[in-house]
Length: 131
Image (cartoon, rainbow, N blue to C red; front, side, top):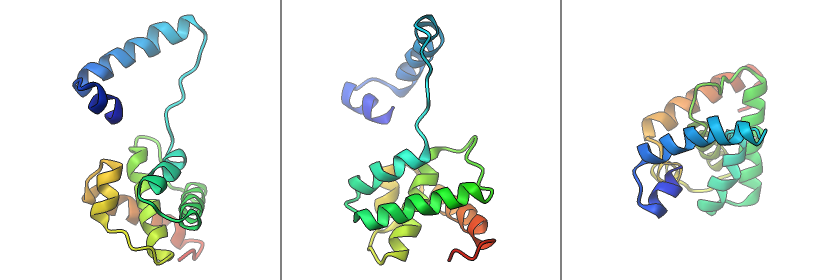
């Protein structure tokens, strides 16, 4: 949504309002379903935008999947924060130098959100001795 707002120079509130109308009225009339973007899909988008090697992107995807399988609750959380934290953990693990600031700029989140989601992922993976 941020990309659309930036390119069209339209306030986020306006885009959000019209998207809600489309989802409620148009898609139901056409019998189409709306699937919001997930954190797993964003991992590769952020990885490409950050110029992270494919190996590190795959590792981030693996981290995210394992965390979700071990109790990470993604419902109600912004998928950008979850994906960005998986990317950051993977980059550190693969010795790919990316700062929290670089990752949060690409993801459009705060550094506080990044650190909170990292703690949640680490706690889910601690049970299986992933790190």
